[in-house]
Each structure stands twice: as structure tokens, then as C-alpha cells.
Image 1 (cartoon, rainbow, N blue to C red):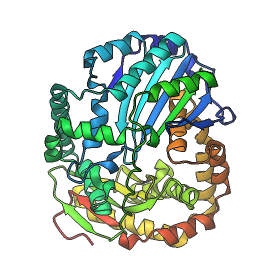
Image 2 (image 1 turned 120 degrees about the vertical axis):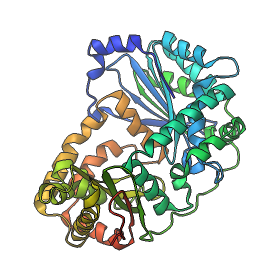
Image 3 (image 1 turned 60 degrees about the horizontal axis):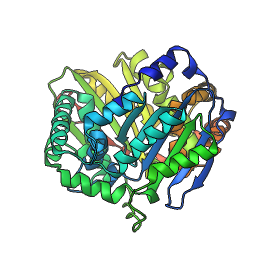
Length: 443
């Protein structure tokens, strides 16, 4: 759920004020820790009369109780559904009157809320006060929960029509088993139906706490104002409690194979393993290697081998998903049902050759040039910059990470990539999923 009533912001956008690019040198991050334990990261950006605030909690889907998958996501979705004093419509109308945007969501590690407001004192103070009420006095009204559960079930059923969506769920369940990182993949129709208002209330009380909270502020405010906004955001939240329990280690890759029939004419082929963390010592070598293998779109080896040489697909890719614990390294190919096994064979051989021999110098030059050259554009506005600041804060990365990233990429050599993939990736131990395809055994 998100609220997006922003007529004044749209008017500002029309004037071109939000298109100003922030250079890397402008992204100087200041930080401090509040007495209640909340960590704050702040970037002063005066180009636009806008302030973006993001709050991240250690309340992602990894914190779902084993018997209640989906509760983290539903809790975040329900935050703006009403407070003890304001209805859902009243909250929506207030944000609209203030020309502010509010949204919330989760990933595996984090639950987050985001506020975008005009930087004038009256609007920003009122917007932050409203966010504080949402965080400290959510009502989780039963009527709205019933509606959102119905919408989530409808979305789940729609996903079953997509071989790719089905394959991704199966791949995550295979890679992570009973580990909390598979909670999202276990959130099916029955799990959604089972969620109750009491589940959401208990989750909110336990996990929405300042001691695990990171506040990111980017925009047209000075340091003193940023400190005041941060204090206002956490006022009234439950004080520090016992530390949250440590998560179990991610299981070692087992090399499982899963085939599922599907009525679609297209098949989805995926294979992967848990691999990369946010503070991974091989982070940059893995990133460059992934770009060459399948992250670089039409420049990638997968596309050249599967599309250009053999015409097996219009789309083949690989990705890395770094988290606090090892996140996905996976490859994906969409192809005609009768070509699924051939596509899988070619994709696996392409990966095996890459792991064994590594990239060429020409591939390295192209990959590094594209990654480094495009990196500043990935945080060219306050809206995109705050996402990076939030990652830096939540995962305790160096405050200089935005400046360090392109330098570290530029230093990666072909030998570094080959060494990292040889040590870390065993194609024989990757989980394999084929949804669709011919009903025969996957080799």
C-alpha cells in the first residue's frame, strides 16, 4: 500500500527542479546515533525544495514466524490503513493536503517506510508528525486487512499463470529450504488467509523499535533540522528490548532439481545458489563477473550463446541479490516449452566455461566501463540516492561507499573474477528449476 497524492510535487517536477543530478562528491554522508538507539544518516542536498526520509527496521520477511509467512509484508502494507485516531481516508487526505508521498514495503532483511515532502517547515513538520503517528499508533483495522488479504490472494493466483513467477518461488524454496530467507516463497494462498490482526499487532510491537532502526534523510534541510526530524520520527516507539535473535546460517547448496508442468507455451528455466552478502570480500569481483555472464543484457555471454548463436530465447540473464546473509546468484532463461532442456544445457555449459576460464580482457574493459560510467546515474536524484544511503546505514557499510564503489570496480582484474567464481560457484551444486517444458527428466 502506498499513498501518492502529490499535485504540488508534480508542479515542481514540471518546472524541472527535480531533475538536478547529484554528483558523487556531493553525496557527503553525516551520521549519528540517537539516545534511543536509532542510527541516522543525513545528506544535505539543496538543489530542490524537497526532503526524502526513509526508515528501515530489522523487520523484513526473515523475521516472519515459521508458522506465519507473510506477516512482515502485511504489517508494512497495513501501517497507513489507519491509526487509533485517524482512518485510512483521513491519512490519505492529510498526505494529499501536504503534497507528500508515503509508502512502505519489505524485502528479506528490512521493513521500510518512505516519506517525500516539500522542505518548507510547515509541510515537512506536519508530514513527519503524521508518519510518527502511523508508526506509533497503527490500528490494523480488520476491514482493511480483509480487503488487502483478498488483493494479495488475487495477486498470488495471477502469479501462478506465469512460469517465471512460479519458477522463482520454487527456486527460492529449493535454495533456502526452511531458512527464513525462503519465507516469501512460502507465502501462498493458505498463508495469506491465515493472517490475523493479532499477528500484525504482535509483529509490530516486537520489531518496530528504535534500537534496530536506521533513519536516512536526504534533501533541503540543515543538520539541526535533520536531527529534529529524526527525533520526531521515533518519539513514542517502544524503547530498547532484548536483542533480536540471530538467524540460522544459510544452508549449503545441494544441487536439487525440480520440474513442474505448466499450461503456458513458454517455459522458465532457472538455476541458482545462495552466494553474496552486502559485506562480501569478493563483492566487486562477483559484480563484474555477473555483468559479463548475464547482467549486461545483450552484451552478456548468456545472451550471445542462447539468443544470438542458437535462437533459443529472447531473454536470458543472471543476477546477484546481496543481503546480510548470502543472497541469490541465479541464472534465468525463458524459452519455448520444447526447447527448455536444450536451453538449460547451454546455460549450464556457459556458466561452467565462465567459472573455469573467467572473462576475457575485452569483456572486462566493456563491463567495467559500463558499470563505472553508469553508476552516478543510479543515484542522480534524491529519490534514488536515499535508497543507497539506506543500504549503507542498515548494513553498516563505509560512509564513503558511493565514492569507493567505482574505484573498487575499476581495480578488479580478470584474474580476480576467475578466482572468485572458481572458489565460490559450483555449477553442479546449484538448484535447478524448470517450469513448463517437456515432461521428461532434467539432465
